[in-house]
Structure formats: C-alpha cells, structure tokens
Amino acid sequence: MKGKTTNFGVFVNGLLKENPVLRLVLGTCPTLAITTAVFNGLGMGIAATFVLICSNMVISALRKLIPAQVRLPAFIVIIASFVTLVHMLIKAYVPALNDALGVYLPLITVNCIILGRAEMFASKNGVLKSALDGLGMGLGFTIVLVLMSAVRELVGAGTLLGFQIMPEAVSPLTVAILPPGGFFVFGCFMALAIFLETKMGNKPNVNLQCGACPSADNCPAKGVGEA
Amino acid sequence: MKLAFIFFSMVLVNNYVLVKFLGICPFLGVSKKLDSSVGMSAAVIFVMVLSTAVTWPVYTYLLVPNGLEYLNNISFILIIAVLVQLVEIALRKFIPPLYKSLGIYLPLITTNCAVLGVTMLNIETPSLIDPSAPYYTYPEALLCALGAGVGFGLAMVIFSGVRRKIELAKPPKPFEGLPITLVAASITSLSFMGFSGLLESLFGIVV
Image (cartoon, rainbow over all chains, first blue to last red; front, side, top):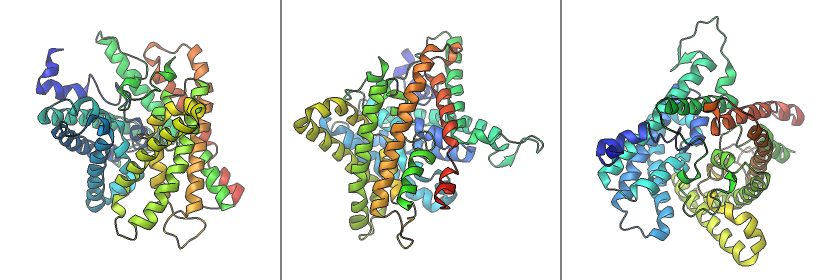
C-alpha cells in the first residue's frame, strides 16, 4: 500500500483498514462497558483520542531518549499522566460524564489501543506522523463507540442522545444496554466488518490477533491460546 | 457476614469479566484451552490480591495524608508493573515449577484493566462494615480483590468449556472466529444476570 507512507495515509489507516476496535481487537473493555448511551460513547471516544494524540506525540518526541529496556514502564507513566490530566478536566467541567464513565475513565491508562500505538507506531515514527496516527486511531475508536452506543441506546432505551426516537408504544428491549447486549452487538459489528471486507475482496483475518497486543513482543504466552 | 457478601457479590453478581467488562482481552485470548485458562486465572488472583495489599496502604497512608489523591492512577499502575516484575523474578528463582505454569501469563497482567480496576474500585466503593470509613477498609479491599480474581477464574473456566463446543459448530461465514465467540460470551453473561438479586435476599443487605 503506497498511501501508507504519506501523512494522509497514516491518518486514514486507523479509520478503516486498521480500525483499532474492529480489526486489531484492542480496547475491548471500554467498548463493551460504556456504549450504553451515545453521550458516554462520544465522551469516552474524545477523551481517549486526546490521550492518544498527546501520548503519541510525547513518546515520539522522546523515542531516542528512552532506553529500550524500560520503554514500557516509561510509556505507561506518560500515558497515565495524560489520563490523570483528562480525568481532572472532565471532573471539573463535565461532571455528568465523569459520573457516567466512572472507573472506566481512569482505566484509559490500560486501554491497549494507546499503549499499542505507542509501541507499534509512535516509538518508530516522527512527531507529526504520530500525532496523525493518534488522531486517525482515536477517530476510528470514537466512530465505532458512537455507532455501537447508538444501536444499543436505540434498541435498549428507545432514545438517541436522550431524545425519544422510538414511539412510546414500542417497549424497549432493556437487555441491549445490559452486559449481554454489549457482547452481542459487538459480535455483530465485528461480523459486519468482516463481511464488508470480504465483499471488498480482501481476506480478513478472523482470529484474535495476539500480535496486536502491546506486550506481544516480550510475552511468552503469545500464541498459547491459539493452538 | 458482610465480608462474605462482598466476596460472593464480586464472584457472581458483579463478575468482572461478564458484568463489568474488565479483563476482556485475556478472557478472549487465553480461554481456548482449560489448562491455560486455569493458569491465567491463578496468576490474576495472585496479582490482584497482592497489588491490593500494596496499593491500599499506599493510598491511605501516603497519598491521602499528603493531599495527593489525584496521583492514584500513576502510582497504582507503577506499583502493579513493579510487583508483576518482582513476582516473576522471585518465582523464576525460588519456585521454578510454578514459574513454568504461571510465569508465562504474568507479563500479560500488567496491562490487564481488571487489576488496575480492582485497586481503583477498592478506594472508591463505600465501606459496608465501617460507615465512617470513606471507602473499603483493608480486609474488605483484600476480600474484594480475592472475589474479583475468583470471579474472573470462574468466568474463564466456564467459558473455555463453552468455546470447546463452539469449535464444533458452524456459524455463518462472517461470524466465524471471534464474532461467534462474542455472541457466546453474551449468552454466558446472560446466565450470570440470573444471580442479580440473589445475594440481597440471601444476606438481607441492601446495597
């Protein structure tokens, strides 16, 4: 793919081809947990995108200074600092979002999309490209979160962003916003992504890609579950 | 009694994997075989209890008195990372057989959100025993961590059984692989919803 080297290609990559949630299967925990309402999905997406861009930029700027042996702890500290920053900002200005996201907000620290991009992209590329990669990946993440939460909110509560959409006569299927609904809708979305990709003529990889995990390189358990 | 309530509610009602969606990556990645899911769960239980045993005192006696509560995120993740490394080194040196069976799962745990999640929730959830305490007391926190780990293990073991059946099934083409696994997880999670309300009537505690 020639476009991959251009700045625009780096940006678009995260939106479709390497969509972090549907294709790389990263960041599954927040995807399942907070997509019960569009407001939450949007808030989570924006918060994670902000952290992703900032941490990608800082890590890429420091990539020559951080010794390879301690890079993972160093990355985690940088990411955790930005997450703390975002957490405090949201607490101060959008307390409703803080209440809705709860513990999942500080848990952006261990969202593997962020550490994964730091390890796979930012530690090998320049600052501008890393920022664009963060933006693309973050937007890809946000889009999936918003779509998933739209489906779940519409089916589970009959509303969108809090506004009543479904007629009152249609009683909502509450199970869609409960945990089982999360797994189910996520499974269907992933199947849809695979279906679309097959239609476009690509051959998608259907197995869980352990290699996308940030700790894959130094993880002896890589491939253990796949035999 | 209240401690037992915390333990069972973490295992069954608030199951970390199937209800709170923490630790989904290892749940999907390592649950294909029974022995690997048992190994992973044992490692998770161990690290969860150990890191709670350290983060709770650090938060209570170091961060709170100095007004540094906002540093909990950074300090907890560092403590977990260091602990996992230490445990790995200690196991390799002193108990090689255990290292062989558990060691390979340890590096996966540093970035496991279930571990950071349990340490964070322990300093946020109101205490049941001592109403004057701002959050879980030390024994409660330890038991909560143990329950979370056991719940993780229970879900992993049950789900590895479910997955063996899925291997034999033939879903529609786009659902093959991960998507059908997620749908199966949805049904497993549905069964855990049956536990809600059970504990309240059993122990007579309203949360």
